[in-house]
Image (cartoon, rainbow, N blue to C red; front, side, top):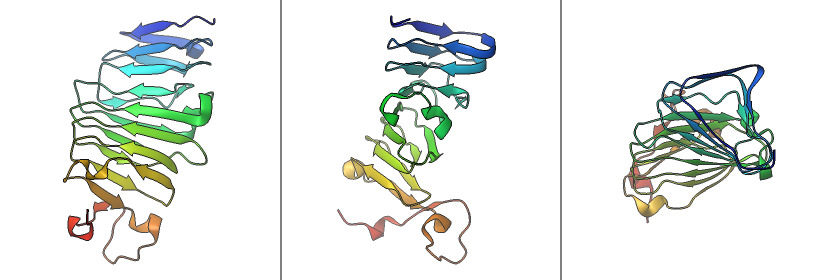
Length: 193
């Protein structure tokens, strides 16, 4: 329907094809610890939010149509987005909000005009950029990781003197000898404020 709906999952929600399909309202899905979804989870139209109460590795490969993901405030979480998460998203933008323990966010598989907005907190976050990303790390010692060239903005890099920018050797054709597939931080002496 058109009214805003809220669903809280403490267990398992299962459907033959779809576990949940919201309507056109501004809907909220609250995912508690141990919650599972068997089938797709579609935010529908409107501006929809998924809030994770239980943390850890946040499984969203079957989620679409959610414009906002809020990571758990009680644990360090890992969240990975792909282009499939952008199906039915209003304005082709998803905002991910991290919280204080420090989170790992990976949008390296997001391409095209799909836009990711990452908002950090006081934790030490690791943010792997999409092709189009706006990143705010906040006050933690953050790693901003780039696996390829793109249209990316860090809004507050100088906010923490412990922030790092990490480039992929293969993604940027840096030609560094001895490099491996795991991005490493550049020395802080390369940067001036």
